[in-house]
Length: 97
Figure 1 (tube, helix red, strand yellow):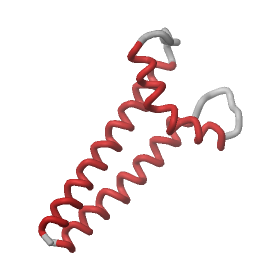
Figure 2: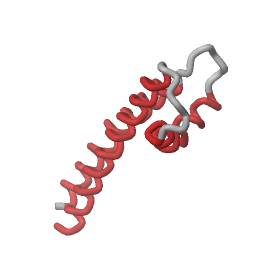
Figure 3: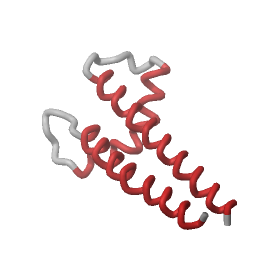
Figure 4: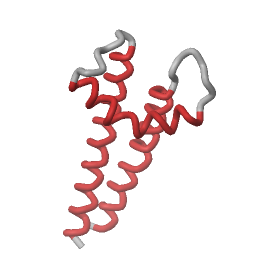
């Protein structure tokens, strides 16, 4: 069972890192959107391609307003999942030990 424990423990660690990176990418995209960046910039294109699959469905659910609130909603969702899934995976790993 120690192999399954190690696998679930590593999975929890990877999921936690992925959530952290997503939060950072969304934060940087929100900050960059304030300065009207050059859309041909490779960094801007990367930020858009990596965050749009998360932000676009949230935008469809929100009513049209003068400000884009999807990054804030995405932060709450990601943080909730980070606080729920990661400890659950760590607890599951401990039970498998």
